[in-house]
Every structure is written in C-alpha cells, then in structure tokens.
Amino acid sequence: MKTKQPVEGKDFYRENEFLVFTREFHLKRGRCCGSGCRHCPYEPRWTKDITAIAAEKSNSGANQ
Image 1 (tube, rainbow, N blue to C red):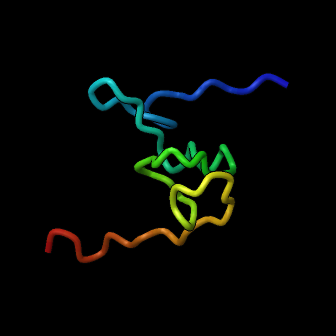
Image 2: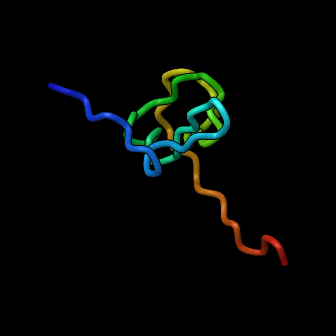
C-alpha cells in the first residue's frame, strides 16, 4: 500500500530551512516520533510511540 505524500500548507509548513509538521499530520501518523516536534498532539509529549492524544488547549482570552 502506497503512503500519501505530505501536503504543504496542510500537513506541514516551512520555517527557514525546517519543515514544521502540523498537529493534523501527527494525528494521521498515529503515534509520537519522539523528535520534539512543535505541534506534537500526544501526551506525554515527545515520548516515542505514545498514542494517547492530549486535550487541545483553548486560546480563549489570548491577546485580551
């Protein structure tokens, strides 16, 4: 079975020379890679092979 290629703007974005994977990409992947990703949705964060999804943080009250 062929794996789909990540889509720029949906699965990742570029920041300088880095590719930054989105929360959605990580959820599709299904487990933590343990690489310290910025948008890691798993709990505890950055723990390889963890599959427990952390609750999303609310941004309400930001910039008020």
